[in-house]
Image 1 (tube, rainbow, N blue to C red):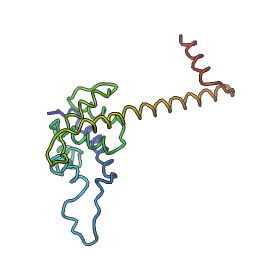
Image 2 (cartoon, rainbow, N blue to C red):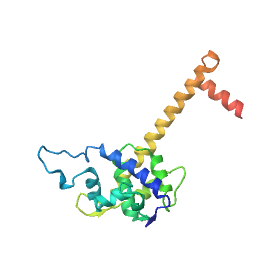
Image 3 (spheres, rainbow, N blue to C red):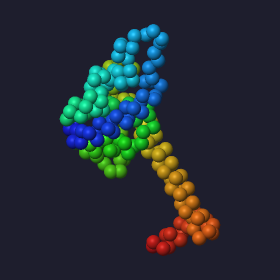
Length: 190
């Protein structure tokens, strides 16, 4: 069981992730005209079904029922299950995962490392294709970890390179090559 050490922040962060799922096609509810909307079908009900909990449980986790209903602890499998669903089906940043883990008693690594994220996601308990609860497939976990670390790492490098080029080209109204600037910075700092 994971102890929730900062319940309010935990609920806020988890709520952000759950709201991201609302936009995912797997969780959109298509109501038909004249259909009874009291059946309880919602994106939260769909998430709850995948985790094997009630929709009210999810609502309490995200603080929708009020601060006093946010639990003090959550089963690790269920916690990592909802995290798995969020990170697999949304583009939420890996820093969200780290911040969420910091609100619990689960030891965290800063910065998050692929092996640590992978080991956390292996503990997820979700409804599988065979209608039994268990961990996600290893190949699925690998895909998610690659998405967050390889793609985000490349994006970070591209952004850093573009910012550095912008700074370089704006210096004293003169243009310098990126390699020259890097060499100059190494010389100055070295």
